[in-house]
Length: 471
Image (cartoon, rainbow, N blue to C red):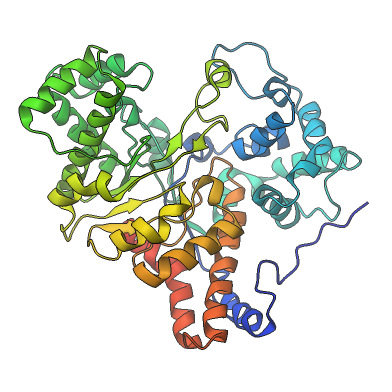
């Protein structure tokens, strides 16, 4: 059986001079607290603080990085226990699911998922042999035994990995009952929410009209007219902020923004409610709502995140049977310079506005995003996201944006994960990659080592606290 090892120099530069600097930098920052300001973990885990059901429930079912790879090789999602929209039968035997995963573990060679999972297996569950068909039952039994212990309850793991703050992401229609339960429990862990208004600002979102109507019921506002609709959105932002939210998040297909006249807004909103928008009109409406949300952020101080450029739910068969976020999001070309100009004309120079831009189109790093963030006070660059949350993606990001935007127009790292135990693994990768990049600058005599250490601490901890207003 192959031995499971985590090399102490993993991800550091091959060049010895740069590697030695990276080692020293990493030693100084590796144990700093984790701030996870944007992600999709389930707040109910921390509200109820009950044991995870099994290894499969913890590590496979919530992690679309894992099951999308298996699906691509012909493994049915039903056999992995992924819940269906209509509740139809899927595999419920956790051991069978785990064995199937173990039989296909070789598919993950060279991927970030393999690196994250090996970290979890070694550091969290103290496994010494590599996962395989032969070791599947040993893994399953060990992990399940550990999950039954008090020190492996969700809150205990949160504390063990020094998570200072963790943000989940919820729709404005969510009542945030789990966040309320956490608050009332007396536990000191800081789990907050983030405001994701996509279901009520995207005319193409399934159930948009009924969602807007429910928004009106929740807030007591008349959401059949433009003023009442905006008032309802402000109302829910205020509620989310009262529950700890410091940010909003917007997952639009494009980065398009708009600055329409009031009559144009009213007419377009009426068409959206009636379900009569063309594809172009729907995109303009989403663009107008990004500008409206920026204006609301000027008012209430919530940091704004924009995650454009993903063709979401590309596989209609999977979407119809399993719903959203099942690994079928596909990157597409995204333009920012012209797309963002209407919003930036209106709010780009606001000193108290922070807009964090993400991309899945790496061709725009040096051409568009770094120059924009290197000029507009309101703009910051989010870290490598989704498909580029990888060592190569992180390296490309730093190489292409630093020369124009510097380090201080970026916001550190966020893990954007649904898989709880991948959080410490992902942050460790980011810390190692940043120390490696800084180690190379020092070795090339482009940055003194004492300054590189300051930057390493800022990238790991200080910049994220500032950008997401978590001080």
